[in-house]
Length: 478
Image (cartoon, rainbow, N blue to C red; front, side):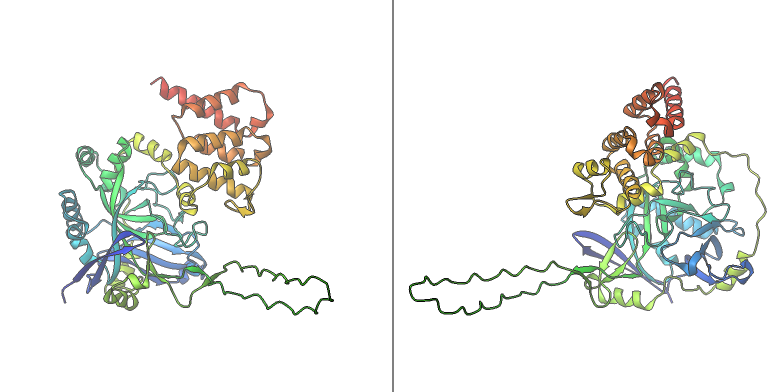
């Protein structure tokens, strides 16, 4: 049977959301579970892999029986040789259509046909070409390791939607060539969309197309904007204030008849306090979601909702046995003299990391009065917790949020923390955060004064200050 692709535009909270329903898909792109691997000796880890065509691309180990709040162990598949030419050409053709001005739904039809059956949302968003920890994404997953920010649900963000913004490669590092990069150096200047990404887990997506373009963008400081495909499959339940029941005051008690000549008084009814609304969970689920959007049940077209209920995100494709056999293969080590540009790698170290982005989605805003309360050592203001009952966690989140949202307020807040000896438990972390602003003149002047001072309150971050000043002077004299 031929692939059926249906696109719907729905409104969710005043925003337009594009849904793509796929039936009879080719199962050429997806993620599936291979269960527990007895040979690993760890019976608490569920093994999954992301595949393209008949090749496993990314190995995903999910600790704690696949807990949704635990970060994953991720690595590039040892048996992967590269994407099949037909699939690679389909990615290239769809990206070219996007940059010729076609809509997302029209441009990505070849990619949609490769998906497994289900419902997806499609949008464009800026990505940082890193692994979320300051390393350029291409080559950062050669060894299996825990990747921060890959848990499906962040305990800091809770039930809020968020935008994935870090990358995992779908091509081996040895496919990088300087000749191809010279072409993309010019191409990225005119592209409105630089790549195509498929959301994998948490803040991370697999880059299907655009690896060389990511190098060019990272080197030249060009935003790396991607067309993003996210599966809508996870149920969610929102909490609502319970309705306040009206309570009537009891009738006034009958007083004894006053004595003759005494003045009669009318008893004053005792006011009944209105109970505060209590958050309660509605019966059943509120809707289905992906990472970036929560869609209530009533917003789905009926046929789309039925497709979500009928399909499973980790379903095994027809060629599952072929994929499993290839996971055991070990490809020959490639030897290449091509080296990524140093400037691209240095720029990645300065990009927002996972902690910063997580904090940016964890809170909506923070006022000056709340910041002043934190500087005074308080975690509450007007009887309400500002961020967290834990003071250190509150400082960390506030710093990361401001660094992501408002650099000037971040610099002022960080310097205020570092000037306060009572907050020395947070000094080292805050100084390292401030030092990420490699060209900030106010931070430079502060760190220079720290070096010139003999004050003991600066002791914890003297090394950070010295390195920052030396690098600032070096870059200034270039």
